[in-house]
Length: 138
Image (cartoon, rainbow, N blue to C red; front, side):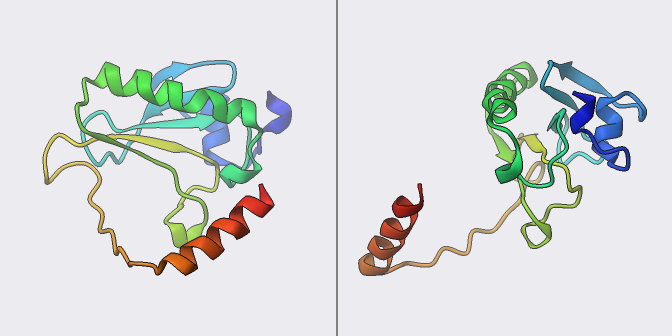
């Protein structure tokens, strides 16, 4: 595990116990703890014990465990409404460049994640072209 951590990374230091945290749970591959600047009560972060800035660079075995852990945490929080959030890159609002997933309870309209969704209708021919492009690269 330690071979894949970065000594200068804040989140890597948390997984190694060098920085204290409010640990929710820990597995061989992931570490979950309460966010110290929560959007709502119980806001939890899940971080892999592997340093990678972006999700597309993270080995699959770490990702395979993430959603089951998020589900377990959401249930433990008793959250009826909640968001699972993961950002990649600065313009996508990533602030700590170590892959992490947020489990954010949404108890009411004012607490939790508040986002806009600037939806834009796409013509079907544009969607079909994008679909062809994506599928050709899978």
